[in-house]
Picture 1 (cartoon, helix red, strand yellow):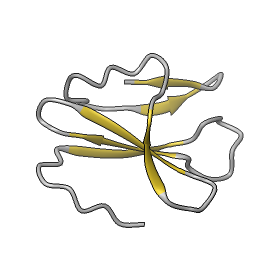
Picture 2 (cartoon, helix red, strand yellow):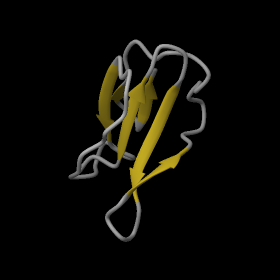
Picture 3 (cartoon, rainbow, N blue to C red):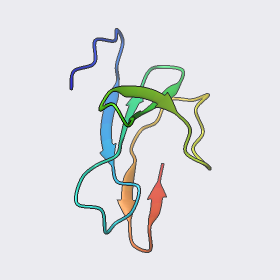
Picture 4 (cartoon, rainbow, N blue to C red):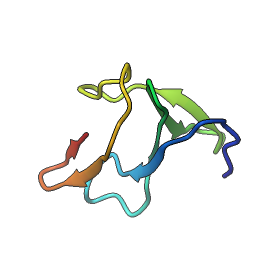
Length: 72
C-alpha cells in the first residue's frame, strides 16, 4: 500500500496481537497529530482508533510489546 500525505514526521506498523503473522495498523505521525490507518476487509487503508492512543499530539515512537500491549 502507499500513502500520499504531506508533513509526515514518523510512521510505524503495528500488529493487533503479538501472535498475528502480519501487521494490521499503520501509525502516521504529523507535527500536531497522529493518525492510525488499518486494512479493511477490502484490503484498503482506512482511518481507525486504537484505545489508549493519543491522537491529538505528535507520536515520537510506538511499538508492539509483550502481552499484546502497545507503547506510544
